[in-house]
Every structure is written in C-alpha cells, then in structure tokens.
Length: 166
Image (cartoon, rainbow, N blue to C red; front, side):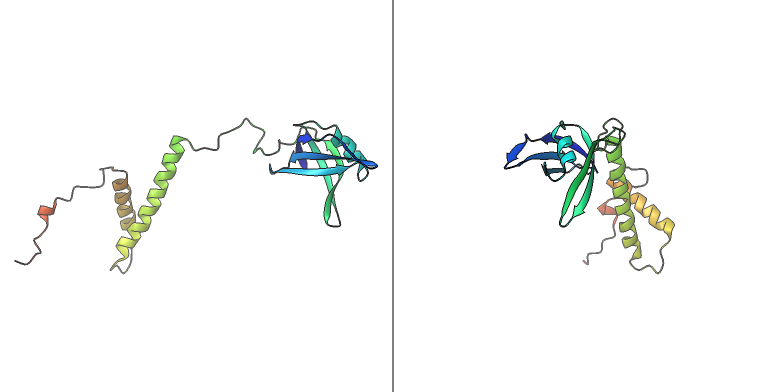
C-alpha cells in the first residue's frame, strides 16, 4: 500500500526498545496511525523513523494472527499518484458549473414531466401513444420553465360553460 506521511513522533524509549507513531493518509485518503517498535521490524522502524511529512512510502503488510504488521517500507519512487487525489493532473473543482447545474435541473424537470404526462394520459386510456406522452411532457416542461412556445392561452374562466344550476 502507498501512504503519505503526515508526521512521525519522536522515538520513545520503553525499557529495552524504542517506539514511534506514524500518522499517515492511506490510498483512500483516510488518516490513520501505526505504532512501530524497534524490535518487531527493525528495517521498517529505521526507515520510518527518518520519514518526513509529505513523503510517500510503499508499505508491505502481512497478517500475523489478528494484526496486520508492516514488514517492509521503502520510499515511493514518485511514479504513483498522490494519496487522496483523483489524478495527477492539476486540481479540478468538484462543483457544478452554472451550465451543468442548469442542464441537470432541466433533465430533472423533463423526467418529472414525463412521469406526470403518463399519469395524466393513463386515466381512462386503453393504450398510450409515445408521441402523445412526449407532447404533453414538453408542454409541462415548458410551463415549468415559463416558455410560451408550446403552451397556448386556453382562455379565461369566463369562456367555460355555466354548469351551475339556476
């Protein structure tokens, strides 16, 4: 696994051996820590004791019992991509542009309009025609976006037949 060192603690003497704590980011960008002891993997301890913040290391791990132990550590050659990045290209914003947001919003409204057109036309119909659904969906979409090209003025309330008994 490739790690990026965040910091390495000063060696602490415990009876007859030394320990250090390595804080790092893994390949997924998660921050983790590993306690290393001078007697368990002397070469890993010696390598990581000299590690500097920002450096990358290729760590070989092996499961021993219930624990994953670091058995080899070597400085990464720089050919691998930085930890937590999507690519080696310059940073790119993850936020939508105004145009992308407007396009996505239009797609959402169109999908909703299709669903509603099917629901409206299904009432009392034996079979739906795709063209009828598209026409109604476009009318609904245009109405939402207040585009008058397909939506015609159907008149006013005064144009309705008087259905109230006298």
